[in-house]
Image (cartoon, rainbow, N blue to C red):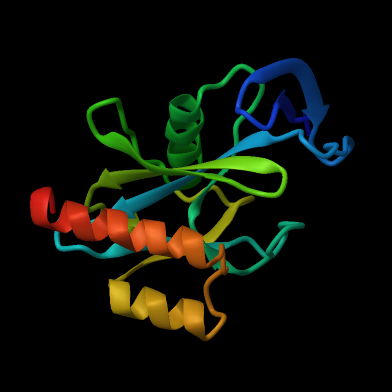
Length: 174
């Protein structure tokens, strides 16, 4: 397996010119890498969620958002587009994939993206090494899964921003 190289950013989100190798480098305080999450939301407001492969080191078997780390040289958009296609087989472009929020975390900047789409579950091309299964859930079911620990808890601020973003979109786009 080839090594994954990340660009390192400073606390202001500016590239430092340094890189880190996933799993082999430790980010120092004040160093960050870029992570993207992509939310597929159907026109009727359902969320497409995925269960991570049991073979994953981080969060094996957990229900979670689609996403991953940007590799060196990738923009947030490019990373989101790649991850969405690699993990679920869904194509996107600048017109369909929209950034909905940005968070500074302990050692990463997290950009959340949204695409309105309605693929059939059996038409998805799941990346076996990353994704065990996918399913549609409505907002109430997702909130219940989070509360019961059946969906990865990305934190209160994360979910507040996600649901605010999708509530706004529901009136305008969905």
